[in-house]
Image (cartoon, rainbow, N blue to C red; front, side, top):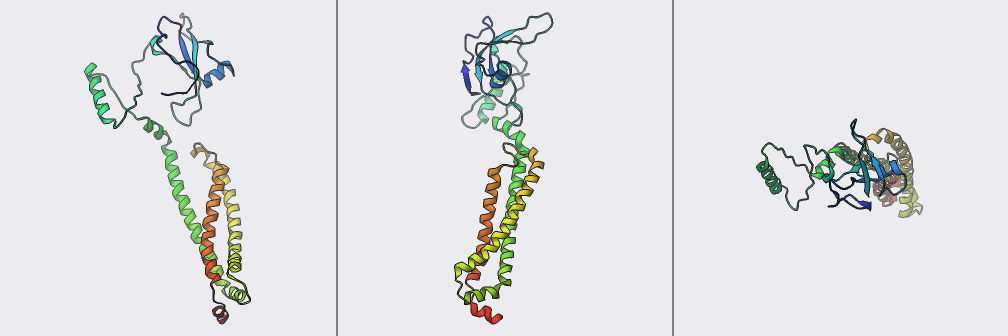
Length: 268
């Protein structure tokens, strides 16, 4: 499986039924039984049926923590044992096979080989990527829906802010015309309009961040690998929305800077 070996060794040909029972444990197992000490060389017992001696295992290796059921599960204490020293083999077995190319030809050949040995034996194939993706199907669906709603919210915010700023410019058309007639240049008019947009943006982002922190607690169970109050995500979303808002506000601001003062004064 390629599990990271931290200390000790892996199983080898010396781990036979007549040799001392060996075991490889993970980090969680080692911390639970031995604390921060290196577990390699230590022994542990396992419970046995009544009247039978408890088997003693010597730890020969330490590996990193792994998950087997789902990505959300906590790391559990796990010990691995060599199959050559197993007393009772299970009727079922799992094998991990790395295939170069399409799996179709291999699965067909494997089924034929197993059927030739014993037609009653069943065999099933599952891809590792599929086993990883299946438990997070809900998270992937929520991420897709959230991304779609986020895009829609950003689009509505852009159109809404553009409409508000454009309406404000239309309402202040005469004032802007007078300012231009009195000597206000284009950059000053743009700053005047953008100042209003920045004020609206600041109020909106403040309210939005507060609501996001509150709503994030309810959505915490739907998140994997991140926290609902993740600062990087909030900063990135706020920055993106601010850039979109400024771009949407710059268009009517630039139009206001090109306003003909004579036309504005004539309307007045």
